[in-house]
Image 1: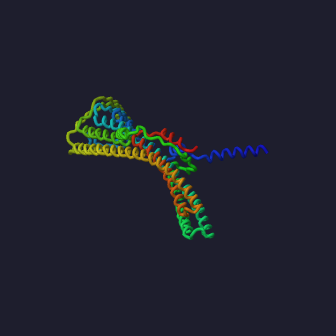
Image 2 (image 1 turned 90 degrees about the vertical axis):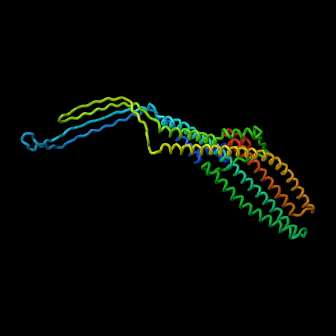
Image 3 (image 1 turned 180 degrees about the vertical axis):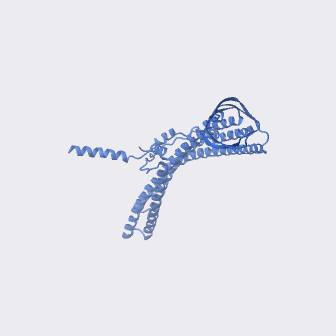
Length: 441
């Protein structure tokens, strides 16, 4: 009897572990492993990290080997000098040739600028990946709290449905005994029908939100840990908006990438102007040629020296290309300014949204207390006959609406805090830990 009991206890323990709700950090780890957008950004980073090697190759020597190995056969007809008779001679020989050459750039300003551009391009890829990391944090948190919001809406709607069902039954009983009019019954029935429709919409919305989270983490999200009741959300630090805006204009990863693009555009102008400049290369080669057969010979040759090239005229193509790159540099500068303004605006909006959300949460907490008191008073008044059924229904509706608004305000405030750090370029995975601590584990 003891062994089956132990087996049941072990199975129950595993079921308890499996049934444990996933928290925000666990969902984020799933997203790191399974999100396709983040995986694409990671591959782009790996590709971008090869740019320096490619750019440096234009400054390093190149070594090439070439050769041929041929067997030739044929005949030749010629006239004898004295008699003039035609003489046919067979020719057959074997030729083996190979050459090894080396070329080392001595002066090539265009190749140097290409190398400098490659370093900037790799830095751009790293900034873009950091932006993708921040975007993943925000997307996961938003999808997580969207699910919690939908769950809260459904829970409140179902609670309202239960309360409305009770009020409908009470109205019908009171009408049957003659203490209330048919109007109270109709009002309760209308409220019940409305909340049933709202329940269907809430169920559908919850399914959509869970599907959106599943797209990010690549699997069914299961149960999620909810926000604890009465949590306190920390205000932004620093408490003024100016440091956040200053950080957004200099450290935001989109701004950093746009600034690097300006530098790349500058180098592109210099690289195209370099096409007017001469180039010089150190060259060295060794070759071997051997021919066997009639009149066979062997030739070995070693050479070293400098080759140079001076461009003189190419149909104004270089001048036109320089003008084009100057225009593109101006475009990159304007893009940088637009990105700075967008980052500044995002930081300001998130800062104001967070402060407004904190004030809204405080006001809604007070409103929730008042709504509960109002509902209790209306229920008591309905029992003693000084309130009618619709008063209780309206008080219930107000309470559940206030509770939904309070939950939504908390989620929005938390999200504005994450967006504020993202706009400032300081959002990291560790910033999820304080939020995760606010959840019920």
